Image 1: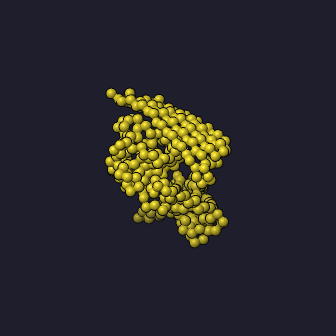
Image 2: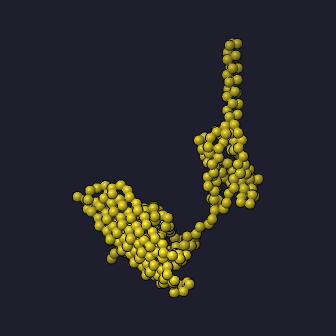
Image 3: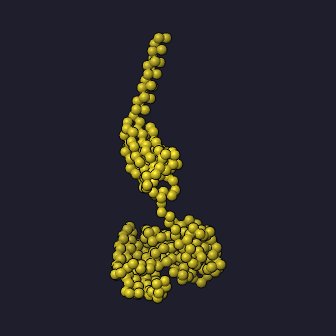
Length: 324
């Protein structure tokens, strides 16, 4: 009996030592959340991610926040609330140290996108009730072909009958392939009957793409039962004072080559640009090659400060093999 009591006493002491030891080895992170002027911000949601897991905390009425019982290591501290611009900050937490860190947050700049396709006039997307997606120039540069770019749009399904270069159809919200109006700078690309083949449409010379989902027949006729897709060519910036050249070269598997060269400039009130792009690939299946050339050109004249005349030209010349 004495042995048992002695054993239990030793166990209790061991458990107490483990608890005390683990508490002593736990680090902490605390500080204040302030704005750019140093004023405290309350109710800000902070998230701490690192080797020890993920922890969350909120700032109190005085801007103070606390993270307790943290394992030692490197963490990323970020603000999870919408409307604040803060990149994740790197914080090192010691196993037994109490770290003080002040978090300075800034209001995120409000970005508004202006579209033309939804109303045929320039209007901010925040004022529209339509389902609109705008693909910017940064996004168009990530894809070589228009079908690959449109795959990222919600509600748009791209059906390709084979490798890149094969017949490619597009469906918006489950509508038929001839229920979508396709425009390039306001010029319809639909064939008689409404169908559009996207197989050799590239992103060369395209500045942005607007996709409006839902019926638009009142504005664009019976071809726009499911929606409208409009591509806009790159224009010459007003800030350009001397000619600018563009040259890019990309390669990949299956003998893929994407080469682009162009020039743009301004002379008094006259603007001009020209671009040539070549895309070729052998694809994975024998005799399913794609060889496509794109030529674009613009010529503009500023009539007044607020009006201009622009002549646009674009040509897509492609050949694709048929496996078998």
